[in-house]
Image 1 (cartoon, one colour):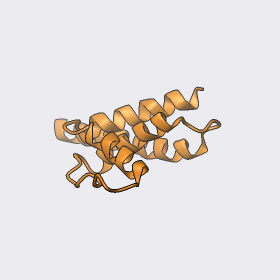
Image 2 (cartoon, helix red, strand yellow):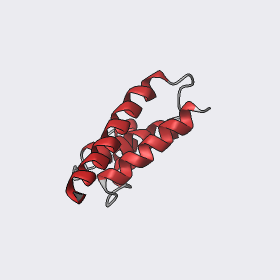
Image 3 (cartoon, one colour):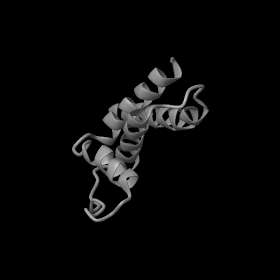
Image 4 (cartoon, rainbow, N blue to C red):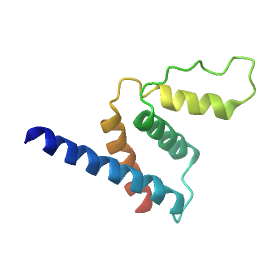
Length: 97
Protein backbone atom coordinates (compact mmCIF):
# COMPACT_ATOMS: atom_id res chain seq x y z
CA UNK A 1 0.00 0.00 0.00
CA UNK A 2 1.71 3.25 -1.15
CA UNK A 3 -0.03 5.31 1.54
CA UNK A 4 1.29 3.08 4.30
CA UNK A 5 4.78 3.14 2.82
CA UNK A 6 4.69 6.95 2.74
CA UNK A 7 3.67 6.98 6.41
CA UNK A 8 6.56 4.69 7.36
CA UNK A 9 9.07 6.86 5.48
CA UNK A 10 7.66 10.02 7.06
CA UNK A 11 7.75 8.47 10.53
CA UNK A 12 11.31 7.37 9.97
CA UNK A 13 12.32 10.91 8.98
CA UNK A 14 10.52 12.34 12.01
CA UNK A 15 12.21 9.79 14.28
CA UNK A 16 15.62 10.65 12.83
CA UNK A 17 14.87 14.37 13.23
CA UNK A 18 13.88 13.91 16.87
CA UNK A 19 17.06 11.93 17.50
CA UNK A 20 19.16 14.65 15.86
CA UNK A 21 17.46 17.25 18.09
CA UNK A 22 18.62 15.23 21.12
CA UNK A 23 22.10 14.59 19.66
CA UNK A 24 22.73 18.29 19.00
CA UNK A 25 22.64 18.95 22.74
CA UNK A 26 25.49 16.49 23.29
CA UNK A 27 27.95 17.69 20.65
CA UNK A 28 31.58 17.54 21.79
CA UNK A 29 32.22 20.99 20.30
CA UNK A 30 29.90 24.00 20.62
CA UNK A 31 28.67 25.04 17.16
CA UNK A 32 29.63 28.49 15.85
CA UNK A 33 27.06 31.29 15.99
CA UNK A 34 26.31 30.80 12.27
CA UNK A 35 25.84 27.06 12.80
CA UNK A 36 23.56 27.70 15.78
CA UNK A 37 21.47 30.08 13.66
CA UNK A 38 21.23 27.47 10.89
CA UNK A 39 20.16 24.85 13.42
CA UNK A 40 17.56 27.23 14.85
CA UNK A 41 16.12 28.15 11.45
CA UNK A 42 15.97 24.54 10.27
CA UNK A 43 14.40 23.38 13.54
CA UNK A 44 11.70 26.06 13.36
CA UNK A 45 11.04 25.36 9.66
CA UNK A 46 10.83 21.63 10.44
CA UNK A 47 8.43 21.98 13.34
CA UNK A 48 6.40 25.10 12.51
CA UNK A 49 6.82 25.68 8.78
CA UNK A 50 7.09 29.12 7.18
CA UNK A 51 7.76 32.07 9.46
CA UNK A 52 4.60 34.19 9.60
CA UNK A 53 5.64 36.30 12.59
CA UNK A 54 6.66 39.95 12.54
CA UNK A 55 10.40 40.69 12.53
CA UNK A 56 11.60 42.31 15.75
CA UNK A 57 11.42 46.10 15.25
CA UNK A 58 14.19 48.40 14.10
CA UNK A 59 14.28 50.02 17.54
CA UNK A 60 14.71 46.68 19.28
CA UNK A 61 18.19 46.12 20.65
CA UNK A 62 17.60 42.38 20.73
CA UNK A 63 20.01 41.54 17.91
CA UNK A 64 19.91 37.83 18.77
CA UNK A 65 16.13 37.72 18.24
CA UNK A 66 16.51 39.48 14.87
CA UNK A 67 19.25 37.08 13.77
CA UNK A 68 17.13 34.07 14.77
CA UNK A 69 14.10 35.49 12.95
CA UNK A 70 16.21 36.08 9.81
CA UNK A 71 17.68 32.55 9.99
CA UNK A 72 14.17 31.07 10.07
CA UNK A 73 12.62 33.47 7.56
CA UNK A 74 15.22 32.79 4.85
CA UNK A 75 13.97 29.17 4.74
CA UNK A 76 10.45 30.24 3.74
CA UNK A 77 9.06 27.83 1.14
CA UNK A 78 11.23 24.89 2.24
CA UNK A 79 9.02 21.92 3.10
CA UNK A 80 9.07 20.55 6.64
CA UNK A 81 10.50 17.26 5.36
CA UNK A 82 13.30 19.02 3.47
CA UNK A 83 14.08 21.13 6.53
CA UNK A 84 14.20 18.00 8.71
CA UNK A 85 16.60 16.32 6.29
CA UNK A 86 18.87 19.39 6.22
CA UNK A 87 18.76 19.59 10.03
CA UNK A 88 19.71 15.90 10.35
CA UNK A 89 22.57 16.39 7.88
CA UNK A 90 23.87 19.49 9.67
CA UNK A 91 23.82 17.75 13.07
CA UNK A 92 25.69 14.77 11.56
CA UNK A 93 28.29 17.14 10.07
CA UNK A 94 28.72 18.93 13.41
CA UNK A 95 29.00 15.63 15.30
CA UNK A 96 31.80 14.53 12.94
CA UNK A 97 33.94 17.60 13.82
